[in-house]
Amino acid sequence: MKDYAVMSLDLHLFFARIMKEHSLFLEAGFQAKDTCFIKKAASFREQFEKILEEAVQMANGFVSASVLESGEIVTEFTRPAECKTELLTGIPINSRITEKEMCLTPAFRVSGNRQKYRIVSWLNQRALSLVEQLIAFKEEILENVSVCRLFTANYPLLIKHILREAKLYRTFLKELVMKGTISDQCIYDTEKFWNQIMMEHALFIRGLLDPSEEELIAAANGFAQDYKKLLCHARTQNCRTMDEMTQKALKETEKYRDFKAAGTKGITECKISSIILPLLADHVLREANHYLRILEQEDYKAGGRCGTM
Image 1 (cartoon, rainbow, N blue to C red):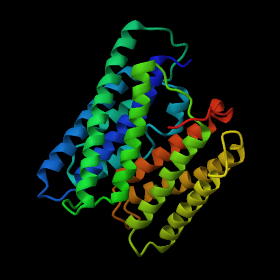
Image 2: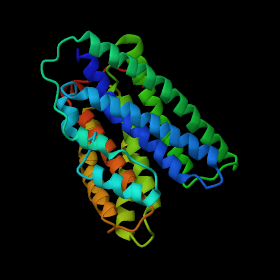
Image 3: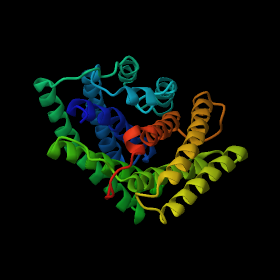
């Protein structure tokens, strides 16, 4: 079994950053009059940044090589995207965390370390409490948006999207806190979740590109349709007949990753017309890299058991 500390820190390095950035995107999307929502989103951004910073401080020598190599923690665009996003929004971003992440070394023959276990265990409990609060906040936003009591520049579907990601983080944290491990997920459930996430990314990209970017809009729409087909075809599969679907998802996500990487570069360098924040572009690129790592890992290829995420 993977070491508890490594498993926990792998999780936080990806998801704590994702939650921090969700909070930033929410903060940037509110109107000036909605100061209560702006302050609350800023508070979550700051708290998840602290969780991420603590995870990074503990992660050197306690993080999986596959996670470090996947591009799900940081990419070559993350630092410039953070700087450009801070400039555009005025929202402070601690890019020193990113610099430290780029210097992390992987775990090697990790042995039990009681002090590390206690510190990581406490971090897991704090992260679980915080993500529970963030889920409630996102649900509050969604409820207010749905009855036209609140306007935000973020699509209602995007709020539902980031809510599902927060709930997945909560599921993993609960397992770590209660069982000390994260159970293998069914291939069907995992691919259904991430194929939907990838499809929605394409829909958001399509809708946030400037209307003049016709080729990119068409390409984004094509990816949305491809993932929609994967989701439809998966309904006829089960955990014993998913090999072919997994290969299709892998090939599609490799192409999509390349599209997102080119888009992130273009948006960060101001060569693509859009209302996409540079950090949002890098954010969805890292999620594609995360999904690719899952699809490529050997124990996943061997097949997970059936169950619900």
